[in-house]
Image (cartoon, rainbow, N blue to C red):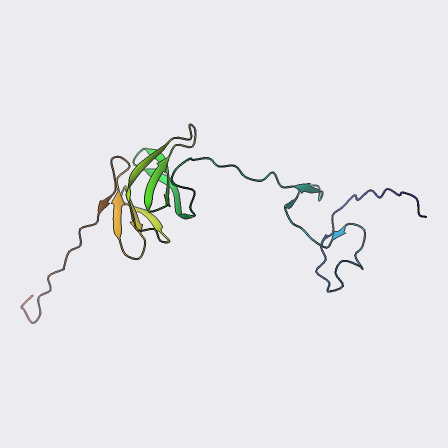
Length: 147
């Protein structure tokens, strides 16, 4: 019967993805790295995990997220369960900005407006109030006219 032994690992050598299922790894290597982060001194630490920040929607998947500055203040906006929400990162409060199709959503800011696209809708938000439809226009083109 073998006795206990203690091994001190001074430096983490990384993930060994050898096909021998972890039977031939060196001291300091790991065969699996689930929920592990590497510190600045090359030590392994368990990841702290995550926690829910906003209580909005019914718990469905987040379809899109944006964080940035509109006007003079920063905003955190996300799409979930067919709605667009603005979340306050300090208090955890959410504001429903309006309904969207429940699909992958893309956000981009331009000229102090946040534009929202999800494949079937094109909306914008100014940083206050609710989201609104973008009004399209047809450009007028003149052909064969004098300059």
